[in-house]
Length: 366
Image 1 (tube, rainbow, N blue to C red):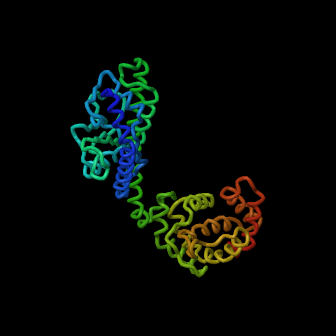
Image 2 (image 1 turned 135 degrees about the vertical axis):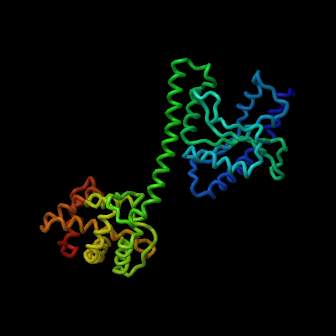
Image 3 (image 1 turned 30 degrees about the vertical axis):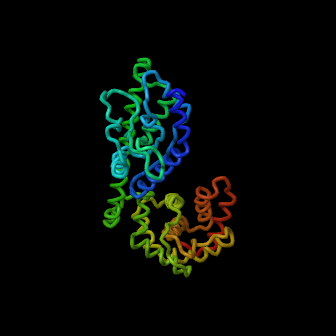
């Protein structure tokens, strides 16, 4: 048996153990990363080098391997994160938990040629074997950490099949330079946007407490809005009217925001002022609405016997629509428009039916 065949036979003998150890490490790494709540991980995957790929690598004329375990990528792990600024944080976790061989590891994001394009990844090699795995002490594994955009680049780069800049025609090389720069800029912009949103969310309670009239209603501001005393008080009133407890879960945020916007309520200040001004009207709507909803849709106020937070804003939207005119025909038309936008985009007749039934069920709103 040739040396080449002996190495392949050794791989065949331990293939199942390598695959099992790779999956075990994948689960461990995923668990470690899940302990850090603000890490945004896209995926943690593992793969075992195929026999055909190994055979091709062993046959390369520019490489010679005395032992199978000189090949570090028989087992590979890959961690993909949404944001490039979290790659280093993941690296810190990996370095603290695994027996990293720093002499074999490399940060391929730090290119010597600043104008070069290509693979960008934090690339670790670490000891693979342990007592339970029954793998040799020299067995090693490769782990790559990169952002989702760098991963997209690497996958397309692999599909195009080029391995070096010298293999790429000059006009194509220039286009790749530009594209690489755009992807790096996109990575940086996504990080900047995330930080801006975090700052915005962090400052929202202070703005709301100060009565900032310019805070728009969106998915970020809705949570702090529901914590405001006026909204919480009105939600409790809704729950008491139904003889139910107020839960912790918010009323369907996307739907609620659409309803508020369609009724003309677009800022936190308008919502807060509205529940204060119309608290009595909101309370008067609760039982008639759910009596109708139970008959028409078999809809209950909340899961597990609890009312969802923010239900008062749902009724505020109805108050806002119905008080815009003193004529019943106008009220039905306006409420029809609301329900057509939200629930019946392709069925005006159904929207008009719901609207007319609700206008008849609700106490007069002037």
